[in-house]
Length: 140
Image: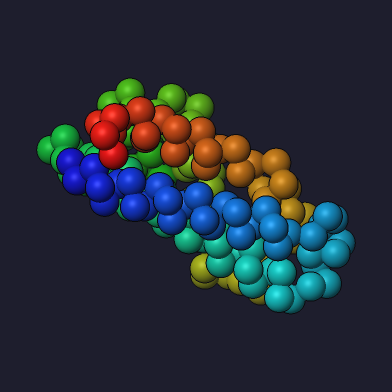
């Protein structure tokens, strides 16, 4: 496993989460009316999910595990490898569902859901990052 690559991706993830926190308005109503905030929040949530997926796939490949057919399955496989908990795997699988909607059906986004993710579910990403960081050598 390329620990420095994982560390770089974890730092990029941290920056994405900071952007979401600093740019997400206080209410879903405000988010629904602020196109610039929508762009920043959705883009950085999508990036965060992609970074987590990249990390998951890198770890699975380094462990010579079969590469899953879907992004969501990558987190299930990490949970099966006991790198992350089953509940973390489920949370990240759900995040992939949001990412797919954001990327492929942007016009159908429910800003209440986006606001809920941005204000109450960023800890899912942070817990994922902590679990991954525990797998890295301490000198990274």
